[in-house]
Length: 223
Image (cartoon, rainbow, N blue to C red; front, top):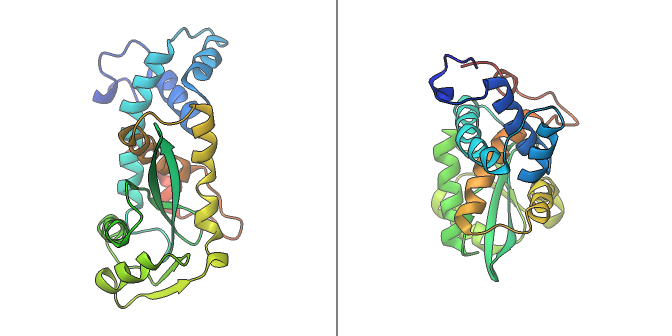
């Protein structure tokens, strides 16, 4: 991206510095103040509040572009899982879908762990990916069976806790960030963060058994 990009209009710092700050924040489990200190060590004086605004504005633009380019081009085997996140004493469910190579497909935050929430996840996946999956792998939560019968009746469903380690492991970066940030402030805060963090994390995810899809590599190029 260049200074001519309208996204950077009226910003005092050049695109390279802004992009570097956003990359630091979403690539590594760093707090806003840590990013502020790392930039200061390079002679770039920016407040942590400015880093937060950059992360929200530019991170969302980067994530939207990555999501647009990768739509329908990731794996055809979906691993679905849910994790409990405590926010101000209330439990919320972070539903997660990844493909067979570990690339994150979608991460909606919901307040329930039932069939309605599972249906919402599946419908979002169908819309974002533009196609159905070949195989769906979940734990033994019965809500998945009910939702699959209504939303994707013809899809093969494998329900076994031992088969779903890929989705369960995908929660770990958010768990680390949760500790660094001393918990998320609200359901909206959590949803905003994961909707930016996970698409960007896909750029740096290299599966152990296969090369990343070409679309992921192309996402780092200027649109």
